[in-house]
Amino acid sequence: MPMNAQYRGPVDMPGVIPVFPLPGALLLPRGQMPLNIFEPRYLAMVDDALRDGHRLIGMIQPDPAHAGSPDKPALYKIGCVGRITQLAESGDGRYLLELTGVSRFRIEEELSVSTAYRQCRVTFAPFADDFVARKGETKVDRPAVLAALRGFLEANDLKADWDGIESAPNEALVNALSMMSPYGPAEKQALLEAPDLKTRAEILVAITEIELAKKNTEGEPQLQ
Image (cartoon, rainbow, N blue to C red; front, side):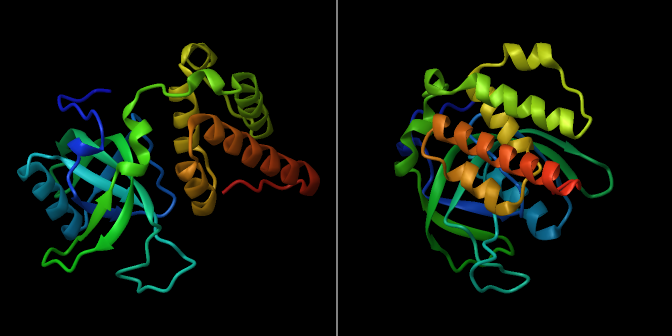
């Protein structure tokens, strides 16, 4: 995990974090997510995150099943917090940054704040295992994950660095494929909320097989 800070468990985490609602965005522990920040409220969020020393931003998806407003959509209850581990200024008012996933969180309460960006009181307690690197790797059905990936690549005429894939540990493989997968917000949320790595791998394989079956049946690409 490319960080100077060490997070050993939920007790090391702040109780209030800024949240960045972004449909289809999936961050997982120890995964890397590039972000292009240009809205003034999120530029301010990054500035404040750097200033307070935590450098943490909570990535979360809007929840389309519940009412909200275009400017303040309802949120899913579970997201993943990341630490800013790389940042560059573009020269035209944008930040180009990379978040490294630390742990999932559950929203307990959204706060009334003066900042333009949203802030929530959260708990990390249900996700203590997220702080343990490679937890549950031995239970992952790696051949099934690789078979699903191979089927997806072949169906979409894509190539991949198989040497890199073959050498990747199970956690890195499953989480990277989950984050890069082209599925919709509901599928991404299911991958996020999986209770363990084994279940996440099973969900990833199942979603991929369903989408490949649709494509084979209908003759048209169904992946979003």
